[in-house]
Length: 385
Length: 253
Image (cartoon, rainbow over all chains, first blue to last red; front, side, top):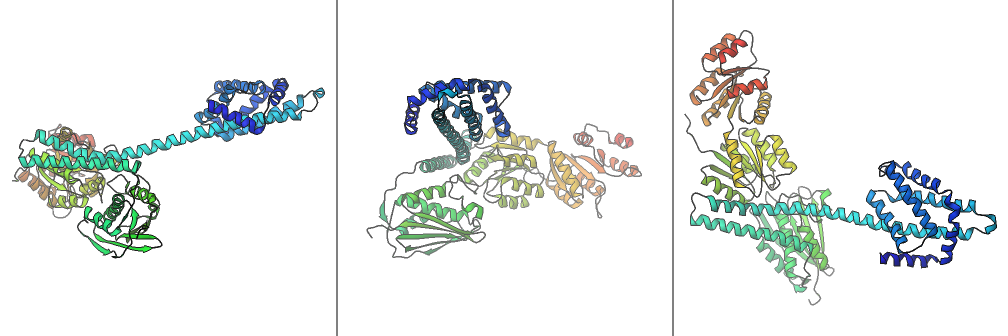
């Protein structure tokens, strides 16, 4: 509220509003009084003319209430005082329009008519012995401009807030669905193991340790899901070092052994310069790309890993001979929570991208349906090579 | 005569641990259990083995659970499907129910609830429909599935023979005139040899002139006669044996 008042004062200074303007407008007040009811009626007639605007007006009783508010608004316009409360009332108008879903263009159009009407009323009722009316009309226009600025500001802000709230809710819904599936599966194993251990008629020691190992494995899996989610939401800052891309790739290949039916073609040269990256995070990048490549080849295929140095970057190529990515999906694959797979939350490439952006790296993909996809990662060469 | 085998359940889920856990629980309770890690494995397994029930995960790489169920209905329509999924409230789950799945159990699985669902399915009477009209068979499958029966289909006396040797049926629905050299009478004889406990319901389009033949069949073990086009309520009564005097029914006709 104080901020708003300060802003209004700033705007007043900017347009050169003075107490003299206020005095002029006040004197003109009685000139519009007789026309006010007609102007208020015209304002709502204008709004009701637009079906989209009319539908937010519930009934005649509401319109009657709104007319009273508008009449007070015009009276305050002429008599002031132009204090913090005055500004706050204007501010509320914009917010109210967002609440009821009235598009600002209709309010703006109606206000424009009202403004013409007020100016005309002043001009036509101006007593000849008062001299020039133009200074007063200028003051009135300035005052209405100030009012409209506040209303538009509050409308824009409230609209933005509403939009963000909606987007936030949609994102939460998407995350909830992804997390639900990814966590219910490990929980399912834990729960059914617990049932077996509690209820089985015959339980050998081997069976017991088998089930405890399953529980342990699935708890770790559930924890990985949560770690992936939180590291995506708040990625840790990279610890930059000069590291070998080949070493990092080999580590990732050891952590994610290729499934049966997929053969590896190693096209990694021996003499690559070192890159500037976080070894753990780059390992995640390669791990994600290798896993994706394998997932794209359910019936087996060839995974080709190559690299070269080019224009201050090391380019790593991870190519599969799998299903390929549909053209429509290519633009979406790095979006968080986008997935075409039965498993997973759809965070892999989003995390990969986020990691690369932080080390000034890049991710590119080319794909052909039925032939496979090639992901190219570019990482800056370290300066101490 | 066939030997009474353990009730059998096929678990279809791509999660190894989830499969193994349900297997341990069900084997401990005396069920015969098979595991399939995806849709293709499930179909392969069902081609070679009979299962009373399939527990179907919905989201699996390759075929989803609903597609697997559609295939199961084609090759083993008498296998009841229970969906076991983390997506229990999803459209896919709704689709499975619309296809005729017996139920949906949410993951993490409440085992007592799952065991109840299994017991309910197993308690459903098993019906064999013997008719060479594939569309009529499909319609009957849908009607009877919706009324709480498990339904096996046979399109010839030969197929009926295979089914009757393998399983114990509560009811056998026989079309009087199968195409080719086989007749309903052949099937009726096999039922008598393999499934003497089963109710035998004759389905026939004949009315005039066949009374004598039908009386004849009634003497040889037919419990009820149902005329095409069938009246569903009437058929239900016949399956459950509520109108039990076949001779009377024939005279009525």
